[in-house]
Image (cartoon, rainbow, N blue to C red; front, side, top):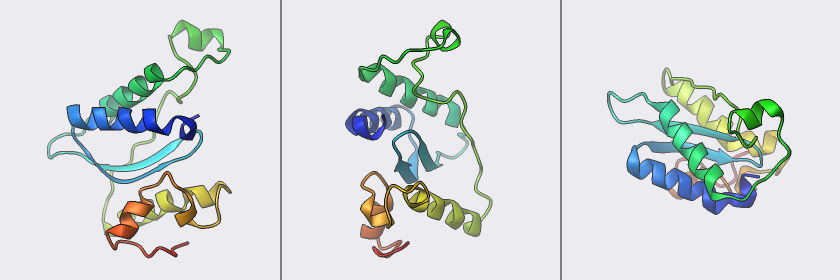
Length: 138
C-alpha cells in the first residue's frame, strides 16, 4: 500500500514538515509500515501530531476502499495505519547508530532485498551520498 502510493506519502511528509518542521535523520518505507528517526526543534516533542497529520494527509489523498470491520468503520478509519506508533527517545550516539542501522536494514530483515542499496524507499541512499554509510553496507 505505502510503496504503491509513494508520491502521495512523500507529499504528506513534505506538507507536514512545512507546517510543523522536523528533520528525518532516517526513514524507510516498506509496503505496510514505516520506520523513522526524527529530530524535532528544540523544546518540541510533538511526534504524535506530526504522525497524525502525515497519516491523515496520505489517507485522504489515495483511493483505498477495503472492507472494514465495524470497529474501524465506526471510528472513520480506513484500515491503512495501525492505531499507535512506537516512540523512543535516542539516549546516546550508540543508540542512534543502532536505530539508524535498523532503518537501513529493515528491508533486508523483511526479505524484500539482499542489500540496503537495493531498496529504493530509504534514506540509505541520501546517507550514502552524504558519506555517512558505504554503498555496500549490509
